Length: 342
Image (cartoon, rainbow, N blue to C red; front, side, top):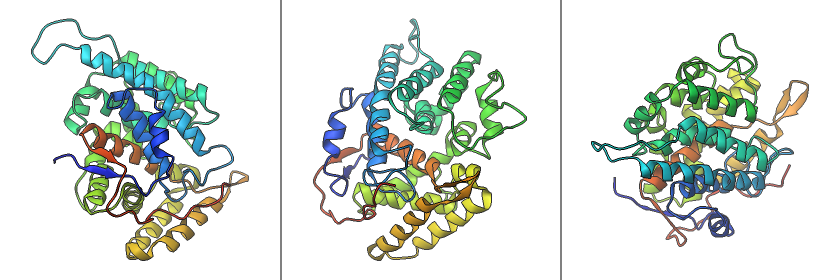
């Protein structure tokens, strides 16, 4: 598919400045990773952080800081890939591993922010970034190259970020020593975490085109090609993905039935014409932020894993050559109305 322009006029006016602050050359691998993270956090998605809404322990500034922090590790990855000999040529391979890039990125993000802002984004994007092409075939080759050393480094990264709602499991619990094969651990966790499912299935779910289980790349492309500016396209793809795939972070924290109920609510929203959907989506957003009582406290219903997949999908579009365009022929405010910080 030929590259297209991503019109960002319905996103915050500060977005160009946020993108300009990325500490990597525009068009480089580090810039693509950070830009995808910045764009994801700039769009209003129900129950998630964006410039006009956040949580007590996680604000939009945390996402910007974390995005900037991971630019350099991925910039280094890009330079290492460029040093590798071309296919069929002899010569020394560049000295980088996917595990070291993931650990370095998570260390940088956790040192710069007060929360686990982007572990899911790092894990969702890293294999795509290491691939020659951001495709399922490219990722399959990257994942097949992982060894015990990668597993140990990735395990350290996950433990450092302290992802929420994992609980204790019999096999490959985070409190245990690292597994010899990270893909085996991801396969065991696939039913509890959508990012683990990506790794277990060579990222097929991200690129899936089947209408009953569409992947985030497909949904973003459909929304943009359908004429929506990027903010509205992100929100539309987010809701459509949530409608088909219950969010695994919500399921871990609140139970499978609650996650399924949220998917049903998202599906109901999509039956409303886009021009009339804003108020209903705003009500859904406020319901998610109000949350429910869990583990002795009131916790929001945060479909955060779905948001991580948005960042991965945006990275694929940017790396495929889709470009950002400030002006838009359709600058209508399709995104959620702004909500106060909570």
